[in-house]
Image (tube, rainbow, N blue to C red; front, top):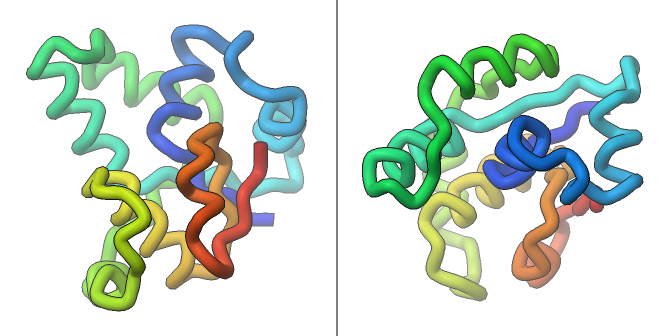
Length: 126
């Protein structure tokens, strides 16, 4: 099964794996799952690191993606167009792009963010 990781899940996996739920850990370790991350998450990490809200370097992000065997799922115009139809349940632009991407691809998101469950049709793993 394909799974799109939320930004926080990548950070938790690197910095504090104890914050991951048992179900999330099982999903991440399951060799049959294809783990994916959005380039939007990489941009979010870079921006928040520059603002000193995070302390994740590009090297750490690359290493985590490599070690967890995560594929970067390209963000396309179709994903962006999906934002036009997305209800405004919350205003985080990074989350909204990840949600639009997951809905467009019809893949579950691994996230602890309860706001994601407000979006009809979005499958959550946590």
